[in-house]
Length: 182
Image (cartoon, rainbow, N blue to C red; front, side, top):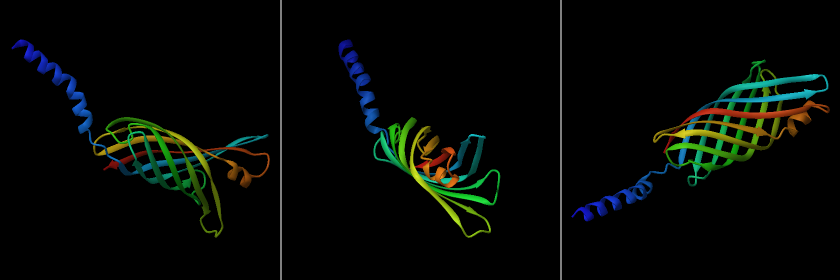
């Protein structure tokens, strides 16, 4: 009788993790809002200067499985130094990491593209920039919501063409976002 009880207990203990893993609900999609920023650092022979934008973004993430997904972000920002200078950006990324579709900690790297447009209020012209980007992010998924922080390093060649010769530019964007998971 004691051996049967121990055997039943052992089987139950070893089987519970397998059943728990099978019943964990995967949530493949999330939609959210973020506090979003873009910064450009220009280096010349005479020194350096920063151009910073801040604003909000809406983003959607689709997780194919717990390790691979994609994200699309739309951001609307104003320059921190000149409120007449506005930036809108679209970013698309392929993300790969861990914890993308399950509850708990998540971390990922990304590769993608960006397209950004600068406009000055009261003027009809605009400047467009685009290119590749590499990024990384961390966050935590609860069943109904996700909180995450991500940073993208952008290809700065379009910005450098706009600034002229002799200017080296480093460009980055990122966000702190809260999203609903489903």
